[in-house]
Image (cartoon, rainbow, N blue to C red; front, top):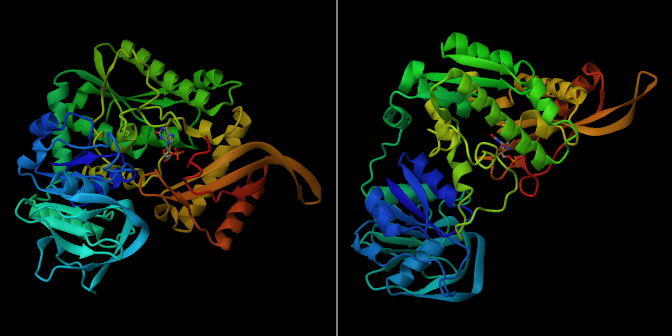
Length: 513
Ligand code: XMP
């Protein structure tokens, strides 16, 4: 495995994504942890030092123990990590008179071939993404410059003997055109075999699940999304009949969803599945509640209550399995080791009660969504489930701003159904990361035939994203928008206005609440 030491960069997750895309397993660890102990335990074969918001010259700036350099593990430093590497190895870092932000051209400064630059600089330059105020001003002994920019002579540097490299730019971001190639070259230099493939991951998880669970019984919370579906299939392979899945209809699901999910898992996969109709319980608890965080907390708590009461009935259940992913877990790692600002309580991480009777098992905790989808393919999960857009745990409750009513939920289901059918008809569903409809608690005046209408307004939202952390709205054609809007208003009695949400994330979030 490769270990990424995080100094608090906004894009550390992207380093992990790039490395995993190259089929190499990696994990992120904060610089504040006991690094020497963790390195001894995890035995990484290479290290990447991330960027970060601090300056290496500030008091108490993030650092790493010098002993790490004696371990003879290849290192790639990025931005802050590059400056820290150079400084700790005896070089100098200074504040730059001209800061470098955004797209920058760098050129090669070394004549001979270097394995780190294989396939790069084909046109004599590389387009990279910079974001720094400090820069390396003097190289440590044994380091040479491999590339420079207008404002820095040390855009790429290396100590070939020790296999220590540093880059001032961010190879992990999309805007650095050949960033992946640079990572690939580094992994090759570090002699890492790209063996983190879907079938290897699947085998590995099943093996670990078998070891962890043994003969115990597991209840798996199944929502029908790709994460929980893959979790269920992995457990099915690992522990067979000791697995029971539980699907809770909380009254906040989309049209026909409960039937589709029960059919697939019960009939197709022959997995033991209990379907619970808890619509009244959830809707009763949400009555009169309009504050989004309160809604989320109530839903999270009620889910766990239902799971626990079912597990008591089933007797002997020790574990609750859920499809938590890596981004949910590392979102809570910040540079100061405290959890980051709570924007929303994602119910399967932040919303769990402190003293649960069931132990958690989360086989996807180290994975990104694209990896989960690949495992799903590997396990033969139905295509329609693999390609499903993400759907939040709190369901339609957070797409129904204000106090939830049965009437508005019903209208929302119909709007969502027409929107999705239109996306499929226009072959757009798989080009969009997530599409959703929202029903406002607001009525507007309209005219249909010759009569006045006073009905609800709904919103369509479609975004593209890689991991849900940032997103931009999808640009529909006028033909699509006008046909969809007409269909919604003509076919759904109770909605007379359709709006389209053009907010990106940030500043918006994907869901409305
Ligand atoms: P936001 O609205 O925070 O959403 O931009 C980012 C992604 O996360 C999904 N989401 C959730 N998923 N439980 C989940 O399982 C939750 O509580 C939750 N809240 C938001 C959202 O649909 C989007 O894909």
